[in-house]
Length: 96
Image (cartoon, rainbow, N blue to C red; front, side):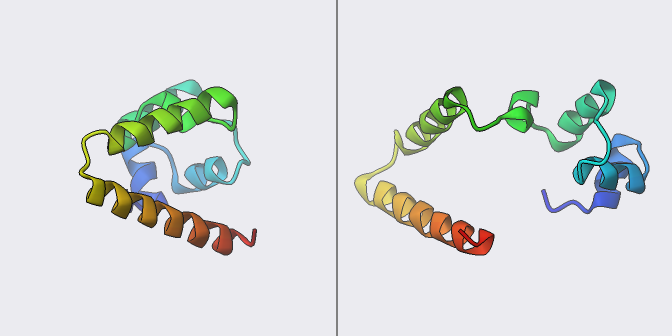
């Protein structure tokens, strides 16, 4: 959402240092703060909690399928090409 840590901390009503500690895994997020984060970011809790398990892979597959479902063949090809390029860029930046 292009928010700074300070902006998000203000939206959630916590200190910037607390937000930093949460983001860096130094503090455990309490449920009330987690709920305020979902509201501030306008995302569902399940979206934030998705982990690398088969059920989540299935959700991702369904989301991609939904995105492509009403595309023309040309649009679908463009989206697939962009996704492949993004995947390559992400892996290269992560050093994989």
